[in-house]
Image (cartoon, rainbow, N blue to C red; front, side):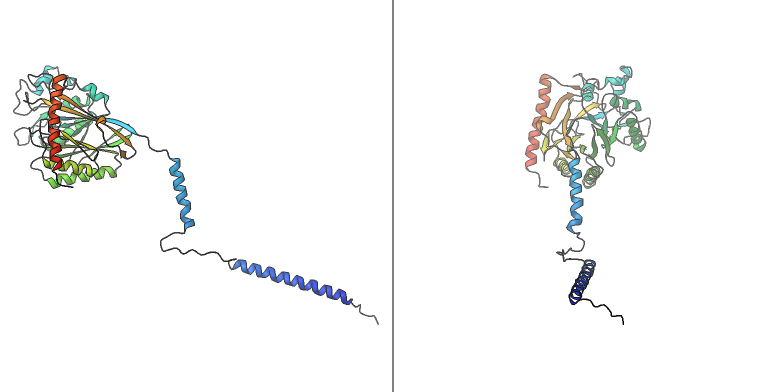
Length: 393
């Protein structure tokens, strides 16, 4: 019989050991795979409140935003000079003397519209923006308001402003609707056709000046108006202008008492409201004479520039007036506080003749300029005394 071969004992032992080692290795690997599927080694846990993202999720966007901000160049400062002049009544009323009226002078000069602002055209041409208070209508309408003095001129008179460096005109005054809504709308249309932006009451004008968005806001705050109404409208307009991206906000106010060289307390409070709301300058007219100025929270308030190219009177007793200029420095949305080096008060007369009004405003010189500026300073001193007694905002 064939005998079955026998494995030596030592070989058996070696085989058993090898098999045992292999089984152990297979079991170990199987356990490792199971552990990996269950999440592996424990990690430190983080508790996140509801609505809060984990730090790892918020860190990356924050870094990205800061990187983008670092890549964007900081805005460069922009300087621009704005000139303001007072009441422009380009025309006549039914009570005007036809022989020496504004219209008579226009005809005498051969209908040369450049005559009227000839002596200030270079000054206005050298600035970046010129603003006036346009009192009266430029219209062919004959439907006059029922009032003692209703002023109007031919639509061609808009060329007086547009052709002499005036870029904007406030219509927030007591003569803008002297010829009803038709006259008011005609004035807007003819000014616009001649490159002059009009603004006032509920209408804001925006001008791009050297890349700066400038908002022009007009408010009429004279006797007979409801203080709460015009103040609210003004501050609402300032807020709206800011929301619409205005970088520089300028307010032109029609206020005060005629022929009074000192502003009313109500005017001063209204000016402060404008600046507290975000205005960078407040200028005014309506009294027909000059008044002083003050600085409030780093912003100038100039209370009355007086008349300017004024067809309302052929020979006003007080012919003194002002052109106010301010140079603003705008960096992004920030406007630098004004200093005395940023402003100019240019003494003028409504006429180039001392004998009568020839409707040609002219810068004053020498002793005459000193006299006018002295009058402005006297009013300014009174304003400072009044300011000390104003109620706190």
